[in-house]
Length: 230
Image 1: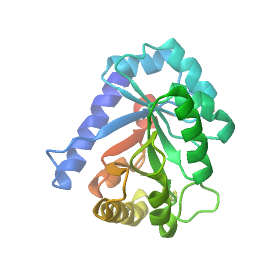
Image 2 (image 1 turned 90 degrees about the horizontal axis):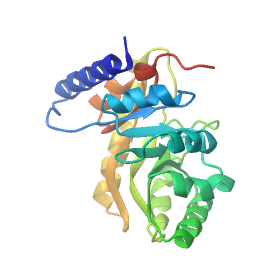
Image 3 (image 1 turned 60 degrees about the vertical axis):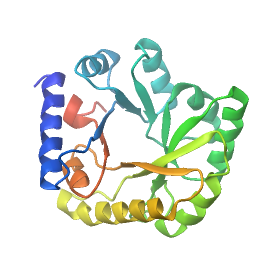
C-alpha cells in the first residue's frame, strides 16, 4: 500500500480502538515517527494529512526540517536528548517528549531563556523500571513534577512512556493501564505549572491497545512508512 493508504488504515484502526473503548468523540494525535525515513516519503505523509512528526536524533531532524515547509507542522523530539544538543533542539522542535532529568530541564531553561521562547515538553516515565531505558520511575514522578513547574520557559503538557517489549502486544496492556492511572492521578494532584493534556504511548505494534487504555497521542512509524531501513 502507499503511504497515503497506510495512513488511512491507521486512522481506521484508531477509530475502531476508540469505539471499543467508548471514546468515539475524542481526538487522537497521530505522530509520524520518521527515524531513517527520507524527506520525500515524509512529504508524502504530510500531503496525506500528517501534521505531527517525531524524530529521534537532532542532527537528522535538522536536515529534514530545513528541507520541508515548516508551516502547519509540529516537530517532536522523541528520542533521548543529550544536554550538548539542547541548544539546537530548542530551535528545531515544538515539543520534547523525552524529558527525564532536572539537569536536562536546567539546560533547556537556560537555552530557552536566552532565546526568549517557551517550549512544550512531556515527561518520560519508565513504566517498566527498565535500567536500559530513560525516564522517571513512577515512584519519583511526583517529586520531579513538583520541581519542573519552577522553570518559566518550560511548559509541561503531559507524560510519555515506552513500555517493555513483548512479542505478544497484549502483554503490554497492564503497563498502559498503569500509565493511564498515573496520568489521571497527576491530573488530579494539580501540580503548579504542569498540565496533563497529552498521554503519549503506543507505537505501530501496540497503539490500538494503548488507545483502549487511555492514550491520546500515538507514535507510529512502521505502520505508516513500512519497515525501517537499517
